Length: 209
Ligand SMILES: [Fe+2]
Image: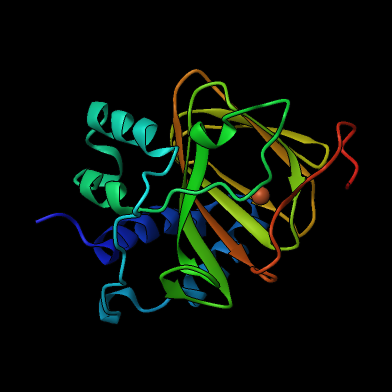
């Protein structure tokens, strides 16, 4: 039998909870907040996740990567990944066509997710090698916890390199961008605060559009 979403979320929560021991007190505080807002997974019914009618554009890349790397996050979740509505919520970019086939995410818990929450967004991202996720911002406070791969991030005026196990915290409305290294990246992410307002791109000089 394939893994349930709840079983997978328990693994994600375990990985993410390592942030409680992070050196940065802002990371620790935000991880604590997220964990407090998550539903009690062991006592929560399995959400209704049915396979999308149309294959998400990102799925072929996710499928290929999980087949080649079957042990990620404990392994055994390829069947679950096949049922997820991997998405990308920005407008298409003329300067980077098909970005939605190279990066995206799935939110298990959140305002529009199968497990409803108005307090927290919690999900998983996937990005192919070389993706340039241009400067963007949102009013939610955000944590990224890298599971596999490496990437560089610009957060405000700081430059960070993230590797498996790394955490990064983005304060509300700080402009941040990501460049994926030469291997695919999977990250667990969380949002708190205004979890409804979508992310927006900033302009080329980093100013809000
Ligand atoms: Fe973000």
